[in-house]
Amino acid sequence: MQPAVTAWAPPMATEADPYAMPSPVQPSSKSTTETVKNALSRWGRKVGEATKKAEDLSRNTWQHLRTAPSFTEAAVGRIARRTKVLAEGGHDKIFRQAFSAPPDEQLRKSYACYLSTSAGPVMGILYLSTARVAFCSDSPLSYEAAGGEAKEWSYYKVAIPLHRLRAASASASKVNPAEKFIQLVSADKHEFWFMGFVNYDGAVMHLQEALSGFHNLHA
Image: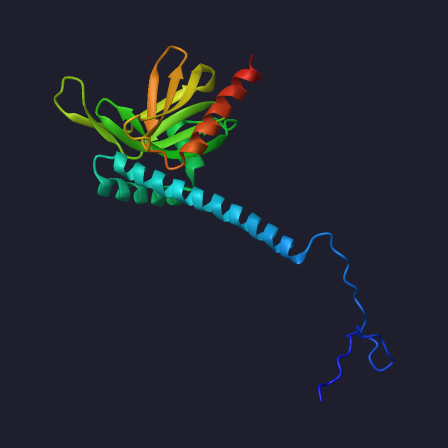
């Protein structure tokens, strides 16, 4: 004989068990299936966004290393740079030392990249502060001293005050779209081309925001 089926009822508080109490389930306007589908959809979008960011980072890092004349030297140089940043207390301290920044000038962002020069791409860091856009090479570069008798070594630096910066434009190679550039143009029409950014989209956005914001503030 089949056992009798009885309806389940929530436990009620009794003298023997005063801690048991009913907790009625509030009716939902959405079915369980629809709720699960919506949750999965939101999760899928987040995974997709994270995957795209990871792919962009991987692609940009690969392009960053390929930009240098030597892939191995670029990888070793980038590791050495990170070690230097940690040893010297961060990008802010390095920036202040390299460009003698006054106390009221604040560093906003820093980006690993290359500066295009007639001698080839120079690996370094592009700094964006509240007063300027600046670049300093990771390592000293050699050049011929006056008279050409001996070689001297110096860091390659560029500094453009924001009030002298007229444009910050994004572009890419038509032959290889993975090769992306940022062109900076000064008020006196000097052009500087930066490439091989690990965080290209962020660099474009913050440079253009800084330029627009500065000129709007002083218009």
